[in-house]
Image (cartoon, rainbow over all chains, first blue to last red; front, side, top):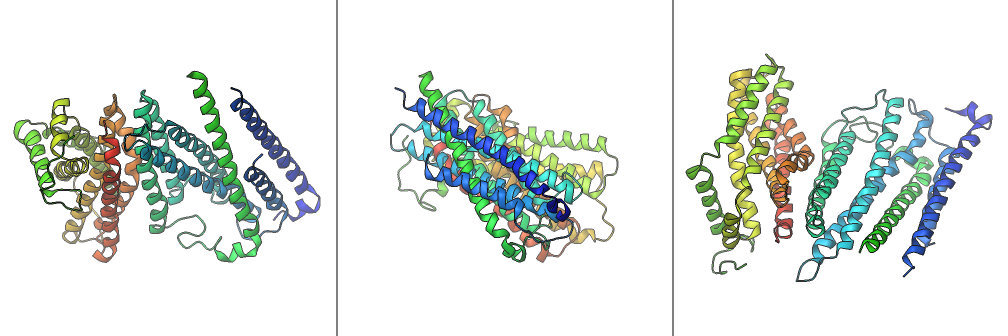
Length: 43
Length: 223
Length: 238
């Protein structure tokens, strides 16, 4: 198990990396959702 | 932003944090990779949920054309979009599974029924898309694709549900494998697993609805 | 479309045995009496069997079985794609005398019959050119009948799925080319069950072990038929 890994705080690094990926993708999704909503309301 | 979309983000975010930070049972061979449970398995649940949605829309499309009413082509659009996103999740599940398999079972692919079920599902729905591209008339395309969708979904469920119980398997929980039974999930993994599954299903649904709306806009622009 | 009057007796409230008999008689006339078209899939099975005999000299039972099923599948594909290849005038006539469900059932039955003929021919030719699978521990006389049952049930199950995909493909413009792509993924569950049933039969397993597999094969024939019955009216609308 990754006990040594964790005790040196490195698991947090993994979490932050994945967190950035996740936040980035979600932000893209939200942006696309808003964009489509705007286009749907045009005419 | 609708509530269910926010819920999707919250649930998946939670499963990401808890999946890495919370404790997990210490099992041989698997070690920390057991955390993949929170990310690899929800892919399959999402795929099935989306394929079920696609089936429902295909069904409603077929029903809409009866009794002299014009058939609702938007339903066909929905059916196709949901199947598309389901295929994306299927690929993700497949690749994540292959990596996990290499690490724990020693090979990228085995003759395991769950893997065979995945391959069959991908082939069945690949044929669905090929069927769609080879018909030009939108009405006929929608009808034939919907018929195939219903047929294919039932056969797929039969394959995935019944056959693994008939044979041995490397997958946990089938064929006499001890892991991932009630024992392990009771240890708190359920606290992360269930939200993860729900979160990813909602995510998949969100992406599928975006796809549907995009196609509707494109259709509106072309006509 | 005007269906015949409801004075005829009904089965399951939708299927008339009379219509099925008419359907089968039509198939018999068209395929067997007037033309020699039925011979084509038989010839196909023979050619594939001979090809297999050229590829391997004395295959192990596993390989033998695998080659046999490949032969059966592709010969059944030939059989099924022919069953829905009538001309426009013939379709007009057929659609007036039978309902869609009866059409599907009749076509499936005749395809199953042709498939059985083709399968048994293929099996015999396999025995002739490739020898019979030699499994040391089992007694050949015990294994023969269960093996034949496994193979036959598998052929029938395959025909059920293929009839439906043939109907689907016949509605498309370039359908005949598509039939293999559409059918093969859908056949995989049926094939897995049939492979298992035939392998267990060859190994000389007791009937108790075989019955669930045969039940599985029958299930894989019943499900496409039921689904086909449900979906065929939607498919056959135009």
